[in-house]
Amino acid sequence: MSDQKKDTLVEINIPGNPEFLRVVRLLVSGYASNHPIPLDEVEDIKVAVSEACNNAIQKSERAGYSGSIKISCWLEDSFVFFKIEDNISETGGEEPDETDDIERGLGFLLIQTLMDEVDVDSDPDTGTRILMKKKIDVA
Image 1 (cartoon, rainbow, N blue to C red):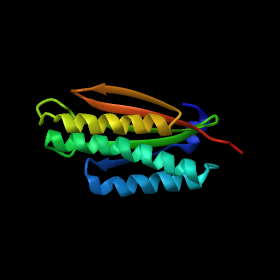
Image 2 (spheres, rainbow, N blue to C red):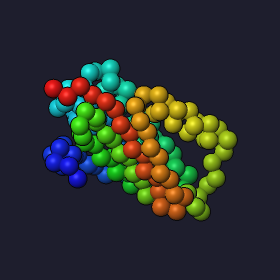
Image 3 (tube, one colour):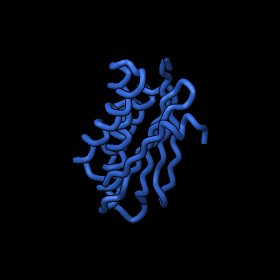
Image 4 (tube, one colour):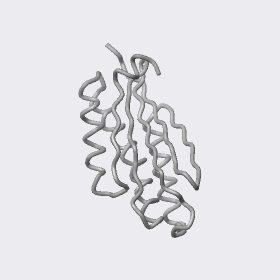
């Protein structure tokens, strides 16, 4: 782990519950206020991170239990990173209907549009990890 990442890393865990999306938005706003990120980009990042967390929350609801969601953010070089990880298994839960698949697909398209790079690693037994990267001007 680079010194810059270590010195700027912030992590929180939230329950897979929609009422905690406000906490996620506050995290993004608070984190951005400590770094030179323009307001319009902060709004884009808030939408992308909230959408990733919302997808995990919907998965949690389908699974029938409240898994946890870990949100990590850090700076590295001239990028801000947000990683969303859930431990929610998709096996044994309620099957998503076609509308759920479309909404998740649109949410992921929105995330890809708002962020510079998006990497997803998903395992139906252990959960999903989404790594999002946005270039910023570092003063």
